[in-house]
Amino acid sequence: MESPPSSFSTFRSYLRALAQTPSRFAHRAPSVSSSYEELSWVKSRSGSNMHNSLRWYDLIGLGIGGMVGAGVFVTTGRASRLYAGPAILISYAIAGLCALLSAFCYTEFAVHMPVAGGAFSYLRITFGEFAAFLTGANLIMEYVMSNAAVARGFTSYLSAAIGIPTAKWRFTAAALPKGFNEIDLLAVAVVLTVTLIICYSTRESSILNMILTTLHILFIIFVVLMGFWKGDWNNFTRPMNPNSPSGFFPYGPSGVFNGAAMVYFSYIGYDAVSTMAEEVSYPIKDIPIGVTGSVVIVTILYCLMAASMSMLLPYDMIDVEAPFAAAFSGRLEWVSKVIGVGASFGILTSLLVAMLGQARYMCVIGRSSVVPTWFARVHSKTSTPLNASAFLGIFTAAIALFTDLNILLNLISIGTLFVYYMVANAVIYRRYVVIGTTKPWPILSFLCLLTLTSLLFTLSWHFAPSGSSKSFLLGLCIGLATAITLIFRHTVPQVRKPEFWGVPFMPWLPPISIFMNIFLLGSLDGQSYVRFGFFSGLAVLVYVLYSVHASFDAEAEGFLGVKNGEMIRESSESEEDPNHKV
Image 1 (cartoon, helix red, strand yellow):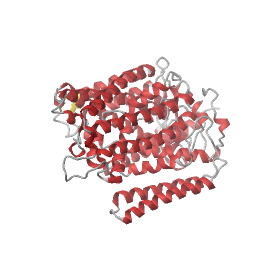
Image 2 (tube, one colour):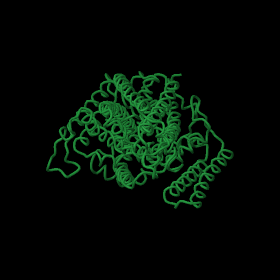
Image 3 (cartoon, helix red, strand yellow):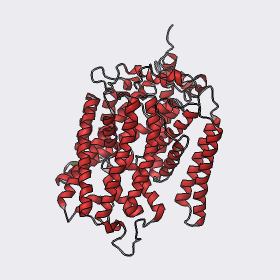
Image 4 (cartoon, one colour):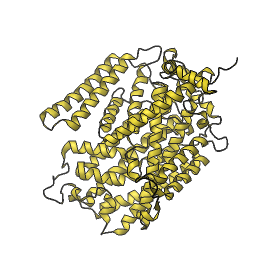
């Protein structure tokens, strides 16, 4: 039987396809695939398979490397000085708990469906192609922008560590506009070197990450020990300025939670571990240990760093830009140099893990045909997504070459939090809905009410004037969210229970994750939302002009086993992969 003509074979064919965009969008946008399809013939579109060479200790190393970058050396001081004071220790514990809840949601999906697509694949089997593409496109852009920022940050930290001004590493191109005219060749060299490493071998990339992460942890332990040795326990309760609020909680509970919102961004990065699921030897055992273990270890490290910094200086004397380096400045200058070296190692590990993750996201998006399938190819010799790695590496290097760090920093974070929010929703939806059997409206109504309640709490927290009315509003929102979840638990039956590993205490933990991610989204500035709106609009445009037609053609040619969501009937038995290792 002859295949139908491609939407892109001729200009006339493309115009005809554009005329059919509404019907194609209505057909493809809500289309979902099953986990069995994702693990079998969708996966086979990459040609060669990725090697199953990673174990739980590799995943822990990748998780720590992805989270513990140079940002913690800055974020800790800013959150302590402006919000939490010495209670920054509690802020990190709260943020770590929130990260652990999101990690649980990722782990349930990754164990059930160990593919390289991470959140893109999880949303595709739950909410359909369009929702997956929208979040995946934002996440890819977030990765590229943050990696470019991290690469330029490496130049700054290395310069501080070896005593050579940053300006010596960069030169100015007068023809380019301000903010885009400082050419950073070192950042480009770092990105391209990491790209070559991840193209060569995942196993060797993991070994390199282990070495760099171990060195970085040793630097962190050194800083913590120096802080406890040179610090003063009285700094936990006594500020330098007698007019400053005193005590362990100088700004009260609100300061602790505001501090938690700020330091939470130091945990972003563990989601990249889920993209390595396809390369894990024993997913059922290794992924839960690797993902949750890395979050727990990082939380302990962060709490120790926060305690060390609080001992070194009274909170109202902490430098918001470089708290640890400034704390030792004038007393032990060589320790400041050591901190710069340690931060440089942290930058390299976070860059390595993030670039591994972005390539695997792009690879699986290519498998679904919403971007060219060229990105889906896995090289037969290296067993890595070579095309996606090389393309995104060059793209990242080009941005890192000339874009100012401050411009890049305004473009990151919101996409990742939005994806965390979506994955938490997807876990609940998937537990309570079997397409074709269960009516989804009770679950969708619960998720919408939970989101609205969380949004009301966030708006009240940030904009309601202090006083009894604000406390009443916040308490009302928490009470409503609890009541909604309690009613949902007792009225809607759970129709699918994970066979191997699932989020505990269902349905309580994912709603808490949804609640916290919305709260953290409310802590971002307006520029973050402008960026999110711009890139989301760009993603919609790409989907309408290209992706929906490419996936429509792929379905017509039999390359996608994906039908309209109403036509698929899933069962846990039909979705199990016979090669899923226990």
